Image (cartoon, rainbow, N blue to C red):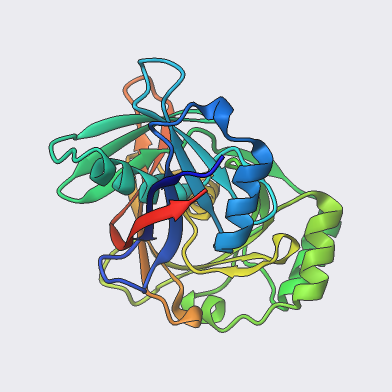
Length: 294
């Protein structure tokens, strides 16, 4: 099959081009999904060589607005945060939809509700499960990161399997220099995608502000510039640690060490039925708009 289809590259978690995390989005809304093989999709993602490349397809059911498939250069993911926001931005532009305030994305992890409010795109995390890890595993991760953690880290199931760890403050997080070979070995051994490291901004004017970094050398992403699923993991971890009793907003900065300036807005929301949900919001801007031969 040789086709020219619409293509965009969207910078996510920023309003300023080249300061966020890019995602390539390919418009297959007019193509039947069974016309494109898994191998073809993976080859395209390998070629774009971004942390994620996504493909928009017609949904399987009218309750969804579109189906999204998400690929790294190596494999398909059930869900990822910044591709969700970037692909929503692209979908709205591809379909010339300027009035939508809510959408439902279909992906391998299930339905992902999305809201749009004056350019700010927010998704409800489909999964945010917490799991404790052993003291031996914690010691190994401390050795790989080169720092002591101020609270016991945990494993967060957010689609990707992230270890989340807190350090003393934002500066400690920003200045961390992991041993990537050791970290890759540790994450591969434990079947974790990587580690989310965060530290509070103690002097910040906005309460609950954090510096965050995302390391995933096992999948050849030594540091993700701005990580949406990682921000879900951090928000869920903070809820477990601090037991917020009311809806709480978390402001997360990421990417400074990579000369980026990403901003994510996390909300730990207490629902009417006393359950807790996790929402991540951010801006996105299209930097490439054209066609791709597939």
